[in-house]
Length: 429
Image (cartoon, rainbow, N blue to C red):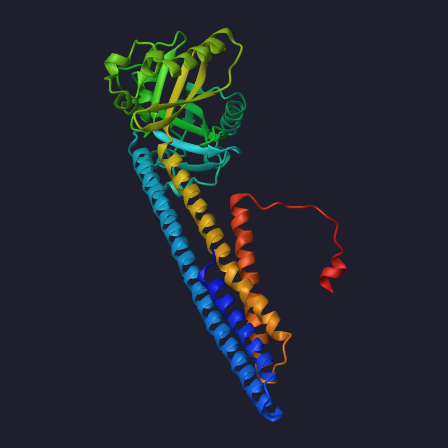
């Protein structure tokens, strides 16, 4: 089945053949030679002029189709760019929310990179370090902020061990000497900080001042409970269990996630908080922690309702003895959805480019072949210039279409790369 362009091309060639046949038959008639020459020349001129006009219009039509295709591609790219901007805006909102939550925590909170350099903190920690703003802490180390060199060295050594062993440091009692010379008793908690892939990228620290009554913040609860309250407003689930797997602490985010009050969760086995499949995985992980065959952080993925969560299980130790786990439940549904949308948009763009390029090759190839045929004929200098212009424009357009096809193949991973030796001097010549 021929398309419209191929049908026009066939009709043009048919008309040309009929004109040639008519000239041949006319030459057999008994008429003067000059009459035959005039009629034949006139018919050839009409044929050539009609062909040039036809292919000129065909070129304009092809260029218009190419412009429309490029316009569609630009619209698609703008749509993808808008989706990307919306994703970035959503991430910035989540970051602002997290900053507000950290600022509202009534304890000193900070986080550091793998080189023990501060990358952020809340206002309370900045004031504890005798500076006015959190940005005055960023980029500095404990050696820059406290005068006690031995304490600074000790903290750096602790952070190095935490990142190496993945074992958190919970409720370490230390005395800070402030710049005004006043000694402050504190409880320090340090845990490894991980990225979305589970890789340790630094440490997160919480410092709670201890009052004269011996409790952090002056409350009647145990120090561990007081430090745990510092992360009660975090936008991820936090769960603490003992060595048997019984829940001892759960923050409000986790309670809301599974639809149970903290009183109902406390004292129950963690395995019952999730589905049977996830519960069986957790039992296997806990068994390895208990017999000492594994002390690395484990991760499992769970689906609650329509949301997907990553569950990180980190063993904790007291006096070199396994004492339980700290569980983080992180919502990765938005990340999965953003990734899926980006991949689908890229797929649609590649398919669109490939489809447009393939559709454009057929009419361009017809124009090139017809131009070659006309170039072999007996044309005037003006006609030759027209034909060469058509041929060069069609060839350039074919190069453009081939380039678009190569880009779409690279996006879809169907472009094959072959290794071969080349002479650079020939390429530069």
